[in-house]
Length: 151
Image (tube, rainbow, N blue to C red; front, side, top):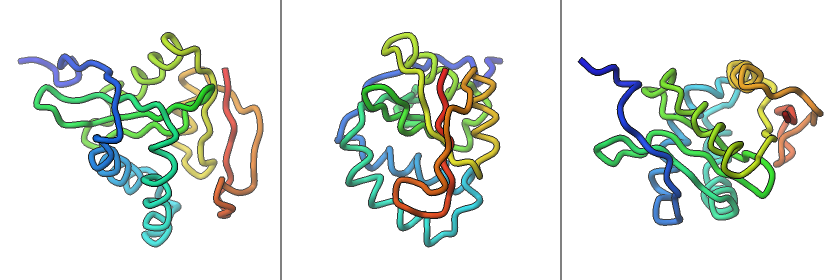
């Protein structure tokens, strides 16, 4: 029997046509990992992600053989702006693969992470990122500190 983590999946470019799938992955992942956010805060961020974050990023994702989007990242010129994996696919190295792609193919060596998301911070540190700075608030002025990481 094949290990599901060994299933053939490729990293592909995503577009605005994939917005609804991207939002679905984002929302499932945030609810599973950003336990410091209230449901109201998640609803606050959702339209921001749809209207600003997605259109301003170069988007790449991993789809399963059946076509379902299960992980994605959004990149700016020099930084990973978003990286989310559907919870059922945690532990399959999809996040690691997306980071390696961003580094190898595009030379990206920066990412920001919510300080309160300790699992994500640990993941990025395991991937070789180090803390280079900190903000008391997020980009929307909310009291969720952000750590600036780089390699």
